Image 1 (tube, rainbow, N blue to C red):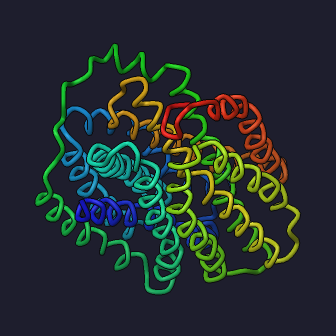
Image 2 (tube, rainbow, N blue to C red):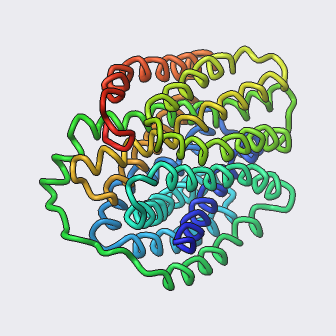
Length: 387
């Protein structure tokens, strides 16, 4: 079990690290390629777009042919797509490489997370998800540093190294036994479970904070650049936030196994909402830095319970956990795409205040709509049950 947790954690660490490596590189690409805020948003969100399109197919692969094959396919694709990204100097190729990286990430996440959930008891689900999220966030901690390194040394050697790492991880995955697959579900059963109210609500609980982060990951680096901060400072700000989130995620995952999912989720959302609303009015670099720290605090509280709620809902509706991880990817990616592309476009047309206020309102409305469910969940309902 420890080998599996180490493998899954390393895979998500690598995936998230190279997803977030774009953050400090974004101002340079915008300057060198003459990108508008909307185009920068497309480049940032192309990864999430690939994940979004591949999310449910990846869940299907994990459920039907096994999590190991899904994981191995994702690792191979991630290695080659990163190689192309490192040597690309045209925006179309960069967007395409990021998109394929997102497809690879969907396969890798679906394989790794399904493998872990099926291999662990239900009572530890929040803990396992929190542990993986903590490592994933640690990857986002390293990601900006990788981007800053690529800015200094060149993207070619830095991104090419991914191919070597993914090959080594594939060899490790081949040595770990898979859990039994069980009976395959009919597509009609899958469709019924996915469209059930509890699964749809839980999917939204993952998508809402993801959309907020899509806005922040585009506008915060550009805002710091406008205020005179370089790639190193952008990397430092996102790294500091990631440290906090990486520490909190495993703790909150374990807490959600004991007290339920809703309370830490709601607290995290309500902490992030005012912070993202203040991003456009931060008139100094330290102000943007502080906003990012508070948003990371909120994320550390809400994401692990949100993913656990979705997994719980899938189990309650007898949906295979492979499809549940596909929904997790779809929810995260759709939020990132809407936040990144929509937020960048809205900022270019009407200023940064509009997308930031919309993101803050989205978080508050989501918590307000979810609160009755949270109250019912406290009446004789175990913390592991579906919402």
